[in-house]
Amino acid sequence: MKFKEVNIKNRRATFDYAIGDTYTAGLVLTGTEIKSIRQGKASLADTFCYVANNEVWVKNMYIAEYFYGTYNNHTERRDRKLLLNKKEIQKIQKSGAEAGFTIVPLRLFISERGFAKLVIGIGRGKKEYDKRQTIKEREDKRYLARVMQK
Image (cartoon, rainbow, N blue to C red; front, side):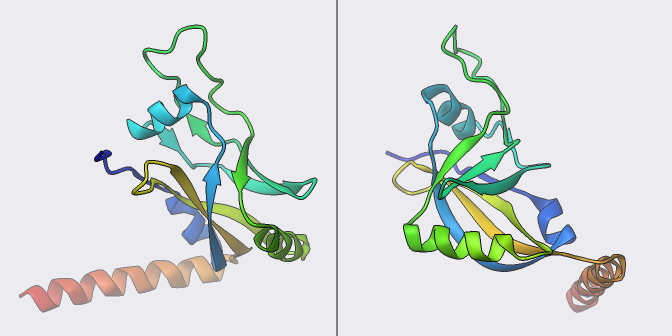
């Protein structure tokens, strides 16, 4: 069964954070939530993860209500549990506890088997001058690509 290509990115995350380790986690969803994600109606803006009781949770992730959902529809911004191995959770918990580090969702996609997956990364907040450097590198890349095409 072929699923629609879903690739929802958190563009702000790579701008605001220097990403270190990344992990791919499954999501615990209800029926109407996965249907909305397959339609591409989700957003990772202002989303973050936290560890509670040796479980990783994603907070403030927006998944639009399913149009055909009746009274069974889900709430748009609820906390959703992430599925990871114990070792991965322990690594995330260790690095997330350090000062200056945060667990940031980077990308939401549908796997080949039809499951919703979330790529999370351990990020350190960038300073203002780091952000300016990122903008300068991006503009230099665009300029080089434009010059090479001619």
